[in-house]
Image (cartoon, rainbow, N blue to C red):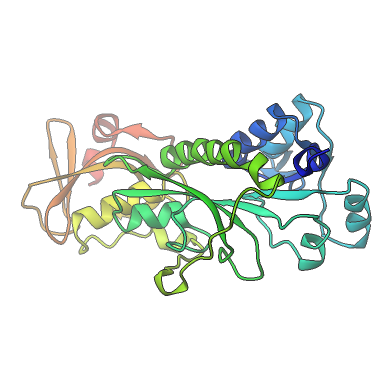
Length: 307
């Protein structure tokens, strides 16, 4: 029996959000999974009702064993050992996995990271690529080591960023790219046919954890920089500012050549323009406090007198 056959059906997948589901689906379709680790149900919405992760929902629909540890403690480790894991595939699990847990894997665990490593190591590579106005990004399949996003590369696929693409759209597309590279590489990895390529640390760049305060708009900044914020922070934390006395979240805009003072508004033909440090932004979709998202024409009809 070859190495790949001996290790097949013994992969444990670690993941939580929508981004992880396409990769989970690939491993399930290839019949390589033995179990899945995901974060426990969490309260959401105004009623704080417990909601399962997208990964858990997929597992329930497909009768896949689920582990939902609150902590990666000894009881969890004992449960994990029973599966005799060949390797882990980690995709946006959401917590740091202790070395003691990683060491249970027969092969070095692997991770899908949505950037062209060593570029944009860290927790927000998709948002940061948009914030910095990148034309391209990509997905890396890498081995995990003790440093964040530092391990050797098993494969990469580059992806173009569309000019008006937001975080939600780009994340969804890159999740499919991640599933593609996993499908192409996983069996070769199990059979030892891939030579991992160490990252060039001299080329490494980094990104930070996004906070709600990062979404606050400074209208004195250039229009394209603000538009990149709106794209990067849709849907969370959203780019936000006050117009008059109204708290507004901005979800879609485009840069236009209009001469308006930074932070001032102009309404023309039910269109809303806001001045910035250089050009202006035409606002296409926004959300006043306490209301749902709306097109600008609807906002102007209801709120123009307050601007």
